[in-house]
Length: 450
Image (tube, rainbow, N blue to C red; front, side, top):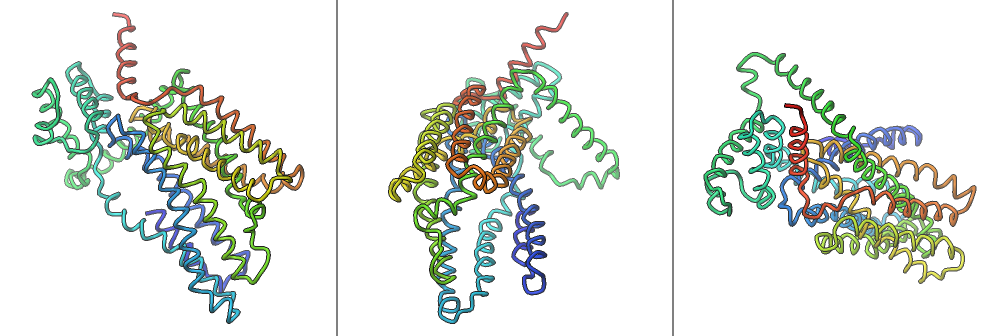
């Protein structure tokens, strides 16, 4: 909802009645709100996907979801070219370049189509079986309750969210304990209804203040549990790994992609000559070339190989090979031919996306237990966007002071460091973090005196 709200208000920027500076302030406010919405969607989309995927296909599903970022970039460039083509006569022949004001509004407006298309499904999405089971495990007060919760988590490993907890699903799932599963299904179905029903009962009971206090206490309890869990080094080092890797990746990745004018200039698509319309059309064409060469292929190779190679190896090789091509671009920046630059840049983008750009999104969704997953993923993503902000603000200043090749060497260093910090992370292929947490809880109980 926040994304849709901010996008609509961005489109309504009153350029005819505000000064240019005021328009930038107006745009900046609602782009920040849009960023908050997108920032919230990162952990939510990852958690929703991870919770509903079976263990064997979890990485593939996450990589597939994230790969739509590449298709979105490509489609955005295609839509821009189509809209510009529609405006060619009025802008290029009639000379009404101010009509570009309509071009950007239409391009942004098209992004509302998928947003509205998925709104109903997002608003009505029930809690996942895995989330409900993890809550039951957290609140278990007896060995029997813990056993039910673990059975539900193990079943979610196999079937994901393909079926609901019902008699039909129990008849199709294979398990040595049919009666036990049936009990788990009934309990989970009851909890699912409790968690997803609307809060009309609260009004009927006429105790809103008690419910509000309970929600606040739950929030404080979650924060307290989060701090306690990550106060242990074995957990903290994983959070450090996901945060720092995402930060280092985005310093390099957005340092390149938010300053594509340098790249477009090197490949001859910087739009420095011709009419205003021709300049914009050439830049849009260059953006399509960049996206098609590296973005989309890299994402889809990740989809195809993530369950074969594993996340850790893909992230390490992605960082190292991106560093290799950054070194080539930095060392030969002024001497590379146009064709050579395009080839190197395409491979750089390819290994960004068949590498850390994909796995930095997947890792927090797979390595952390369900009860901490969304918070830890959001924190990791926030560090990533901090890296993007640092890079965006510093790139032009550093380029003027030390030159573009030196800045590329900095990005090279970030990629090498990213490969090093990846060593803090475990391989998550076939690993269920909820069962790991359950085992840790069992070991902790056994160590208690008495």
